[in-house]
Each structure stands twice: as C-alpha cells, then as structure tokens.
Length: 246
Image (cartoon, rainbow, N blue to C red; front, side, top):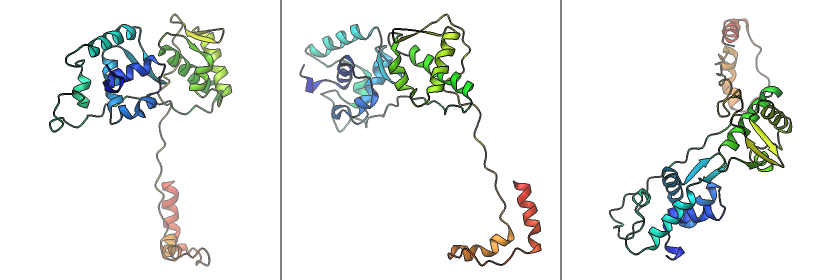
C-alpha cells in the first residue's frame, strides 16, 4: 500500500517504529490532524499495542507482532483493516461523506505533578516518587538516568533530585548501573503518590469595605489619589467588622 493511503492507525504505528514518542509529534502531523492521532493512539492502547505514559506513547512487547498483522491486513486486497478507528474518524474509503458523523475527539488523559514542596525532605520524597513512577511506566523497565533527569526537570531542582535518588537507593526501589536506572520491584513502598498534591487551596477571606472607603470610592474612580477627608469616628463599626472578617 502506498504510504499516502495509509490509515491513521498505521501512520501512527509507523512513526512509533521510527522512534517517535511525543504525543505532540503525532498531533502536529498534517495527515493526523482533526483528532485522528488521539483516536489512533486510543485504539492502539485498547488493542494492547502501546501504552500512554507521562512522557508520551511507548510500544508494548506485543507491538512488533501487532504491527506486522496490521500491515498484512492493510496491504492485502479488499476492505481496509476493520478497527473502531475507522468508525471514529470516518476513514473507510467507501463511506459516504454526507453520512459520516463528525469525528469524536478522543482525549488522552494526562496527569500533572504538583509543585515541589519548599521543605527539602518532603521535596526529596516527591522527586523519588516521580522517578519511580517514570521508570515503572517505561517500555523495557530501564531508562537512561539523563533522560529521566531531563524529563522531570532534575536540573532545575538539584537538591530534590539528589535526595530522591538517595531515597530510592535507601528503600531499594531502584538501582543505577552505568547511567541506567531500573526499578526494583521488591523494594518497600513508602513513597507518596506523585500525582496527589499535599494540602488544599486556601480560601480567600472577604474583607468588608469601610464607610470611609465607600464615601471616597467615586473620587478614586475619577483618578484622585490624595486629599481625602480624614476617617471619622463613625467608621469604628466598619473597622471592627473588617477586623472580624480578617
């Protein structure tokens, strides 16, 4: 089959085989625009060919055999490879464009890390949990330490990075040999959830406006910044309410 006539799922698979992993690379490909990249990745993940991780899309051990079967089915004469992707993006050649529903945009879930704590010990625990999560989601279980450090912004947080590696070695969660870090599945699970923020957001308190402010607000809106009358005693009630609100 000519490469120009490849289905979106085969195009994504070919890019994966060529070494592309970043989701944005697939989304910015003109032939995969309009939600086709997300739909293809979702279909491939459902069939067990890939796995969506923090850093992008990683092929599974079954990807090679799955890809060969995909090429065999698409290259043979007759209908194209029947997958749900064709129903999602309407890529079946004989489909009537007037009857094809608009493509349903498939969402690839992406989780985010919270900000590192200002406490050195807690920041080290958070970084250790991120490193462990990153290497456990890798395709072959071992990753270059430099790649992990770059992906998790370890260069911006050197103290947290070093403390995180120390905790992983201490609790036997990972080993580093010749610049390659690998998970140790028999280690103790004492690290926090890397995606769960510590604490909640503070609620802003409503401050009651004083009578003096309300009287002079029109002048302030007109651009006046000085020369206001002094605050009178009858504003004491407003000040007391203001202090209670704070």
